[in-house]
Length: 297
Image 1 (spheres, rainbow, N blue to C red):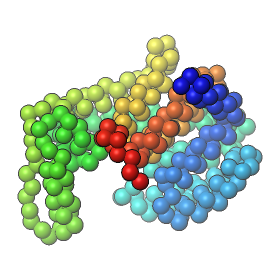
Image 2 (cartoon, one colour; image 1 turned 180 degrees about the vertical axis):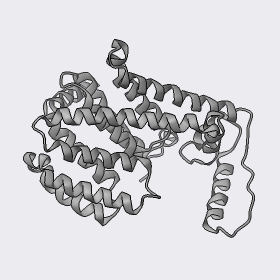
Image 3 (cartoon, rainbow, N blue to C red; image 1 turned 45 degrees about the vertical axis):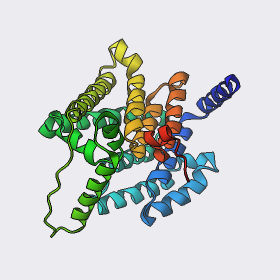
Image 4 (tube, one colour; image 1 turned 60 degrees about the horizontal axis):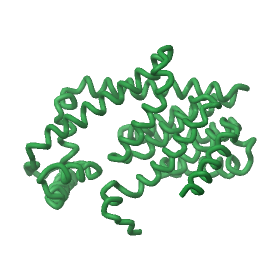
């Protein structure tokens, strides 16, 4: 076990010594490949750019390649503007930052500045949406998610007396209703005395954690926040995506985290890289799969 840890530590040191801007560009392109290539508009420019960026180090800073990737993502988001998830817009902004940074000699500082801004804006708007929504503050939104969101239903089953098969049946009925807009049907969702307290706990835990991240990235003159802001973000990645594996968003936040730390912060770099590995594992196995030991293909 010690040998494995030492090997991982050596690998982390080797990655940390790699030119940081090149590493960030490659991770950003990998993000698009893994989580954003479901249309030929994106797949073609990304696949072509990948051939060069992952084989020739100098191609990672080629502005024309990044322009092609940026245009592909922008066209896709514009065309499907009412369907794409919020994190795909965030990826769009970050790819735009990667493209703009190629015009500067000090690319790393440009990436760092943009990463800081995007982290602040991400959590600022996330908090604004939550605070402005009465359904979120009173726990109703989270209660509905616990009953209807497959990635959260195992929490409902674990903490309440509601059976998983019953939740699945209700979810199938809801999907059937959506498939036929002319169908008139009323579905009564299950409840339990523990459900609302659980929803409120998750609601305000998210608010406190997101506020802590926002404050720590804004109030950098305060030493406590400056020294611990990355740990707040890492806790957010671990806690949130352990339960709700929206991996593309987590992957993006981890890249932004690496982009804004200093070169000498090797420990933080290694933790962010471990977050990448964690997120990929959670993208394939839920907590319930890990508990049950269900590793079927």
